[in-house]
Image (tube, rainbow, N blue to C red; front, side, top):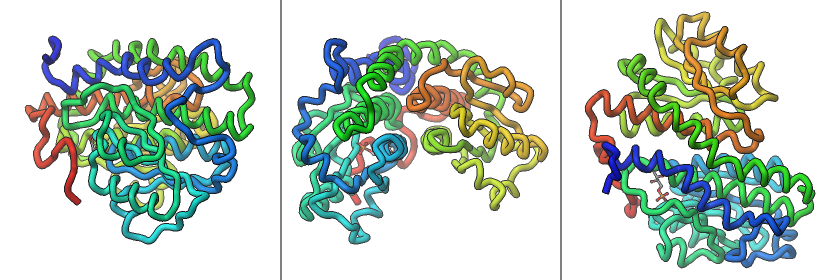
Length: 366
Ligand code: F6R
């Protein structure tokens, strides 16, 4: 049932081209210049009245939500707050009928996320669930549901579900922007062309697994790892850091690259590993100058960068390239090397990668 792979996690990582395709394609038919989300009843009028969006989730699903927040807010100009469910539900958040609440959950059963959904509904918000498990509690209780078609995820650490959640965030961003007149049909069609190519590009990243395994072997004895980036790359770095913690038991921290000099850079010493994500052109120079500061303190930098950028090789120790795509969609590609890196570090250390200690697949207790 592992389909020839050593672990479910690796199998699920390698299913991601299909998962992204299954989540995107039915919603992006070539003969209609819109996102076809017929399962969502939220009308254009209702969207026009929305003055705030919350995106609430836990763990990896929350990190997908952060990418959604960044994209939806930047493109549609509607303010979006992303928050972990266990905080949101206890702080008496400002919610009313003009709030759109988006909850994201693979299992659809996470206790805190479900409680946040109920709170939002009670206060009159419209709730849209982005869920993987069909018929789960969150799927049943949300007003609208956008399924991620990732299929069953067996490994405790979430991989393909996160990719499907990102794909769902891309769809929602385009959908809301089109409905609100913040994206033209022409802009949409060119973004859609990029989305059509994502599954193939996912496979191109996966074809680098051997190289990533070699890098994992090289850095396997790191005791502290920092993941840094700016903008969307910072959001992606959080997911990378979580994966390394939870399956490899290696301490790691994600940081906004610009925050390093406000404290954490004191921890950079000889051979401290920093994974630098640099896919955003408008922030490139800024992040690279932070990476140079790390090199000046004898840290090791492994960069995840966009193909064609050979300049970065002069600054860092190692580079993993992802294919070029639109800046909005780099998160999905940039995360895959992080998944493989965590997987190979974990297996090299001899850990049970599919069932990491202390963790359950579905967190139905608070
Ligand atoms: C990490 C992981 C968890 C889940 C979190 C939310 O790899 O799997 O952080 O993402 O427990 O679970 P769902 O998405 O089922 O609500």
